[in-house]
Length: 113
Length: 113
Image (cartoon, rainbow over all chains, first blue to last red; front, side, top):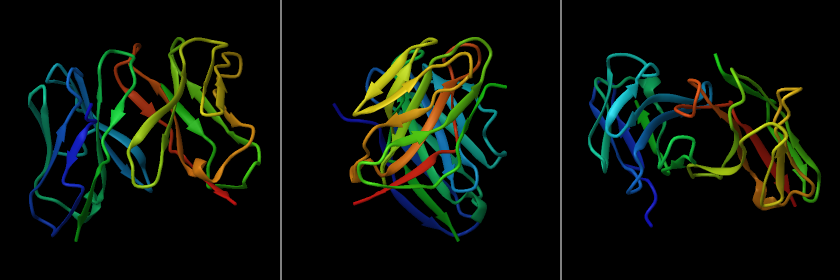
C-alpha cells in the first residue's frame, strides 16, 4: 500500500508569495494531521481533521495559514502571504482510528527567502 | 496541559554502547505512550508503544517501560548500531483520549563505528 504522499518535497519561494502544500493520506484513514518541524520549536501540530472536518486548528500560527480537506483523499495547507519565518519542514500524517499509529509523509521542506 | 519532556541531545555513542533516552510526561489519567523515530530525510515512524502502566513496549531491540510512579517512559537499547542514528521522539495523546499526539522536542542520536 502507498504511504502518505506529500508534494512538493521541496519549495523555495520569495517572501509574499502564496505557498500550497498537498497531502494524500493513506486510503481508509479517517484522521489527518498537519505538523511543522523547525530546529527551534521542534514538532508542532498545526491542525487536524476527522472525517474531513477540522477538529482543532489552535496550532495554526495566524490568519496567513489555512487548511482544507475537501474529501477523504486530499488535503492542502496554504500560506498566503509567506514570510521567511515560515521556513520549515511541513509533515502530513494520517491515522486509521482513534488511538492508532500515525503514519507520516516524507515532508515538504519550505524555504521562504 | 498534557506534555512530554525529553532529555536534550545530541547524544553520540560508539557502536555496541548502551543507550538511554529519558522521557517524562505530565498527563491527566493514564494515556498510551509512544516513541517515534525519524531517520535522516524521512518522516516519523512508530518505534514502540505502551498502552497502560507497567507495560513494556519493544521493537528492533529498543525497549521502554511505562512507569506510573515516576511518570516516565525511558527508551533503552543494550547495544546500538550505526543504523540507529536518528532523531527519537517521545509522544502522548491529549484531550482526554487519543485525539491529538503531542511530541517531545526530539533527541538526536549519532552512533559512530
